[in-house]
Image 1 (tube, rainbow over the protein chains, first blue to last red):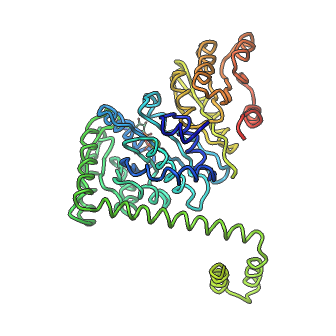
Image 2 (image 1 turned 180 degrees about the vertical axis):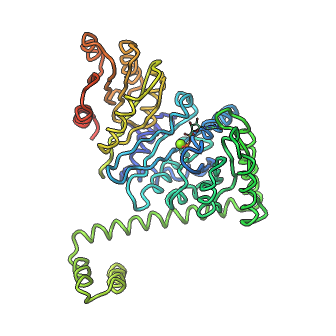
Image 3 (image 1 turned 90 degrees about the vertical axis):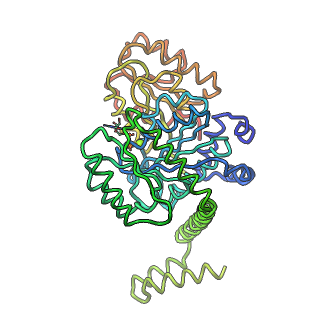
Length: 312
Length: 132
Ligand SMILES: Nc1nc2c(ncn2[C@@H]2O[C@H](COP(=O)(O)OP(=O)(O)O)[C@@H](O)[C@H]2O)c(=O)[nH]1
Ligand SMILES: [Mg+2]
């Protein structure tokens, strides 16, 4: 299969294969991305995050359908956690997106979080690039909003939608603790349930304490499963984008995202190099046993390791 | 790098529940595979598109409603049309013994009838997927 040609002629198999190769850190795939990097940066990237079961996949499905009505092509990267014990995962987001799967203008990819080491955000970055080159106008990244790696992923988005649901006070606490700051648009989904207005009010209140700029994230009540007010959500997303462009924040975000990506790749390479070294190197072995015997302390040992890496 | 095997677990046809498919999905996950779970009432077209976009190594389908003689071969045929017949196709569910040879003939690599230990399915997938 000629992946380069396939990618540019709209062959979904080529796109799918390249995403796998990127995910598996295939050198050839990195080569292709290097070569086609100039074609990236055209797609609008939208992160969707929030607690499990909040309706992120359902929201994504409905947003994608609205965009399809406007003739836009839509890529979706849906991330679910990998079991740290078996390395396996059940990736179930497509269940909510069944009728998108045969739409020629939609490409959906499920992704497990797999190993640690920031490998996920690297893979997600890679998948977004591939879909961008593949000609998608909008790319959604769905993640469960819990850990740092999820935060890293949504950082590569132009706009982040936080999906909350009524009645889960704890969710709001979690949102407050970690990721209130990264939401650009807040959706209170399942507004067919009691307490939706209250949740919206609570979110508004928290936003009062988190004003970052002249942009204030809107809070929108929706019922994704009935496709109610999802169009308002999309409007809010478009409005945020207009703000990003007019304020100059878009270029700042893109720059930050590129910075994060370079640092991620660098860190990943370093950690890998250290890990490889620590498996073979007597130098590290020595540091460890010296620390065990209290001839060294972990701080000094780590400093020596840094020195060792610097000197080469 | 070690990459997990990716399997689509799908339920074509009009079955009303997917308990069996979920058991298989969990077993495959516990065996270290990435299971893309698609839910109930998938058409063969949807299953094939999903398999392609997910770059799956295997499609595992289960049917209780009796439409296997039509739906299983159709998935194989569509995969072939799309040039994706390197994807392993296996089936399960309530399938009469007499139907099995025909299904194998049609390109379904294996049929696992109720009571087959999940370990058999897992081993079969592991040793028969075509990609390294
Ligand atoms: N009552 C209600 N349920 C919804 C709504 N939107 C989604 N759901 C249901 O919530 C469950 C989880 O949805 P899903 O999109 O998979 O959530 P995710 O885990 O955040 O991706 C599913 O059973 C949906 O049908 C809604 O607006 N109202
Ligand atoms: Mg989901």
